[in-house]
Length: 151
Image (cartoon, rainbow, N blue to C red; front, top):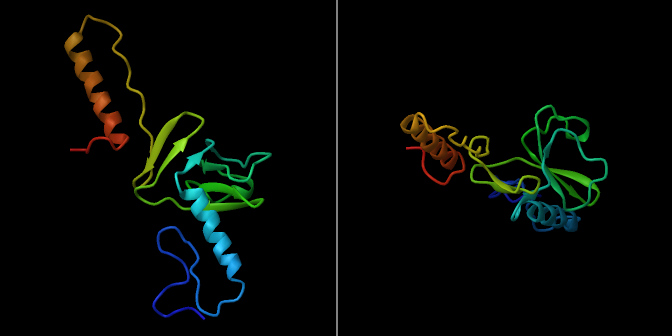
């Protein structure tokens, strides 16, 4: 029977909580360990809409829009392969991950934020306006990456 002071799962990452006298505690402990293993220092193989054909336990992906197969309805979540099954984790503000496919860090703040590379000035005829445009693009990229505040 659950403790009246606690819910049965944690609020942020949906980890299962144990209660005195609970049967099959190993299931809850194993699920919690699998979720922590997925979310601690999170690195994904890439972003895609369909599950890979031969996933390996311990690998994770960011589920892209238009998700299909076992990932249907899981857009924007982390899909992790654990013990031959898919484990899905909803992102929370402050979550960061490394995309191994691009080598880029991605962060979550109301949605996944990915910094884009600014365009390099291409001519020297209009130096002042190109410089201002390049500096503005750099500031936008730094803000998107969460390195500098928006204002």
